[in-house]
Amino acid sequence: MKITATKGVVAIGLVMSLGACGPKMQTVSDSQAESSNEPDSTSTRETVVIGVNVAEKGASFRLAAATSYTMSLDGCASGLTIASITQANPNVSVYKYDQSCLIKLSSFTINGYTYVPSAGDPFTSWAAGDIATFEVSGSPSNNYKVVVGGQLNSPITGTEAVAYTFTQVAAGTDESIASSIVGDSHALSVTGDDAVIMDIVGVTMTGMTAGGAGQFDFKIECGSAVSGSSPNFACGAHTITDLKYRLVEDTYSGTLSAAQAAALFDGSESSIVAGDLLATGTSGATNGGYTAHVQSPAQMHLHNQMLYVIKSGSSYRYFNVDVTTLSYP
Image (cartoon, rainbow, N blue to C red):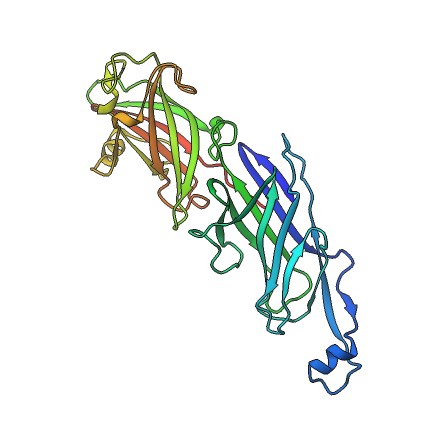
């Protein structure tokens, strides 16, 4: 098990790799040879011993490693199946040259919680790149995104590695978009109106679409204490519920012109409702402001550079927003 933390992303990696000494030759017993209908009961087959290495990788901070896990092996053309692979017996022998074998993670335990595949978002192919949600039974909000980093080759060659990577995002210090790279505020004015003075002070990942777009809540704070009473809070001269916003892919090299900003607000922008308002003294937004519910415009990992744009009257303020992407190992 590997655990890394990169700019607010907690990543836990479970790595299954081949033994360092290479493929191990094992003799199939007479009874096994007979059951395979081979004419020579003394014949041998080459098998590969796969070891499960559970380790914690050094990082800027550390979390508890998984205390247990369960996996299974099925789908093999040879008919080989293993119902339960656990940390108690991490060495698994498979036939070299076998085809269509899949090693499947079925549960893991960390910090006293056991995570299992969710009914709504399980693995579909178990191939490299497949993504699923693992959650605590009865507590679906306590979950991890699990990515298949690599699977057994078909046919098995004896050189591959199987990897599962787990990521969890929570409010506060565990953020998918690190506060250090949510910045570079720029103001644009079309008719001389002042752009609203606001800043992004917190980001929480709330989900992911089936198409791989990340869903986030941005906590937006006013540059000074909001005035008035809800739902008519004002930030400076701007009533907050009059503001509009969008999150778009940065195809502008990080710099918007006034004309480009105006073109983004074509009716597909989002509005702020009373339930999104944050009063003064709100944790993380001392001056008050609002919560923006946004979604990345495409697959988050492949389109991680974005712009968050706020429209106030005929003026705009925008931020360069970059998702910290995961890498393995």
